[in-house]
Length: 464
Image 1 (cartoon, one colour):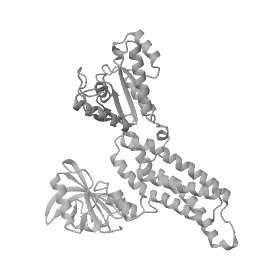
Image 2 (tube, helix red, strand yellow):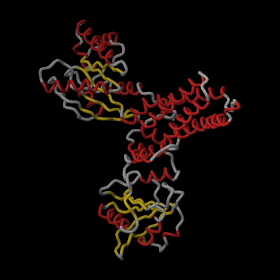
Image 3 (cartoon, one colour):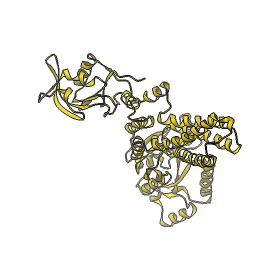
Image 4 (cartoon, one colour):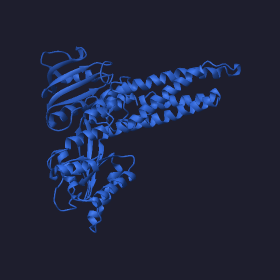
């Protein structure tokens, strides 16, 4: 996959803007651009130092295309490790395309998706997990997802994996050495130290694997289903959380017949709220389909907000029915966090509030109409998310590929532990050690292939 030809692409979003940046990378990048650049001070582009910027014009056959700034980054001290030129021009789509087409006619080709970052990886500027973090950083839309991507791009995750792999590699070399002296029945690898190392590696891998549960939802937004009977205020609550009229609100029961979704950031963490159709027995076919989707969204959600009209809790029978409904919801979804909300609290007397607090000690009194209790709800949502690791800059796994490789590496480590307990031969143990090393190496790209790289970088935007 290594290629040193010259590639060009628009590095900023396409369309009209104040400025646009066109990026060129390759061994001949500077010499290709120089004949078409006229510095306003008469400077020769090819004689300039790395990391310098020149003001001038892009000119073709005496025709000035635009006044531009040209930034020079000479390899290996550039993003890709090659010579890189970045042309900052005016943001007219016409100007952008004229400049790009000029250099496509004169020694460049269009960069494929993620090719600049791929070259950075192939030239040893970053490892594979850092390259993937670049894509995560570009797509981050909350403080939490941004923080995780920055931490990984700086090599926090890579360093942790490399440290484990290096220690395991040292023992692997000693075990391989034992195989060369198998007839003399000697042990170069201290089995006690190896047991300690395996236990330590196992603990680290389990921690990283466990972190994926929070990392994955932070990256993609934590799905929260708002459920309850018709006309309890689900759509009003969604509007209150989003601070806009997103869902239609009506006194007519069954107004919401399909799911409505929107996302907001709370405390830097993205939450994806899903307003669902009210749950009840109905003969209306369309409403029935909406209720079916409600149960589907409950299965997909990480958190369930169960909304109850507190004004209808008038006697023991209504209280018992609600308690039974809550118990059934818990039993059907034991792995999910459940928040019980008693809505329409603005119409309750002080005595009724005290009564309901005693009957439902874990519930929140809330008025979606006035906004009372909405901030308490947001705080409770955050309490369900383990942001401690995030605040302490601990490594959090967000990438499914990394997660799968960690699971495979852990399985091999546990095989080695079992083999040592059963005193299996060094040659069989060496196979498991090599497999564990391979799975750890897949994460950072120390072990990779063209198909894997193609799949990863195909998801990048062109120009990065």
